[in-house]
Length: 173
Image (cartoon, rainbow, N blue to C red; front, side, top):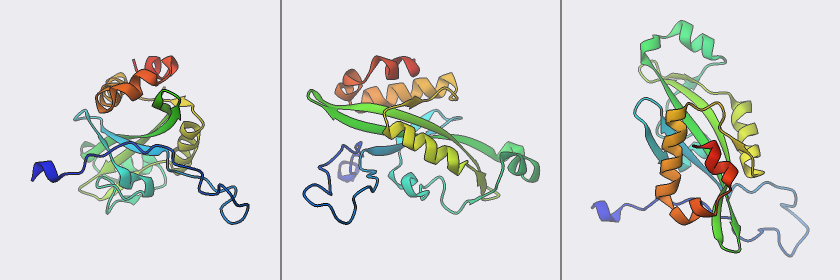
């Protein structure tokens, strides 16, 4: 049964869907080269969570988001609050093959018993955009989470890691 599980892969840019015509879809944004990676800060677990692209990840399901983190901390027991990172990983391709091109890390807080949480949607949108443009935005991450992400990306595909920029590797070290 274990061997039937589908291995999750990073999305790699496909051909331009608007190639050859100038009509519908011109100027639209393609999310084919973005993959959300989640980190459970307490557990140090790292995994690809494709459903996070639409805020439907297993972690986020059935959670109502509050407007501020302060509101969440004030109104619900702090001991039940759990922190996660969603890292938007952009993949691009060069002649040698695919590589990790950009990273955008965003905080996510969930109080599972209360089914409440907090995430900054503007931060998620902006960091996803920066990752897609090849920027690396991981400076707000704690060292343990950055190292866990680096280890995950290396183990997931050593070749993609090797072809990635020195800036990306240094940002995660």
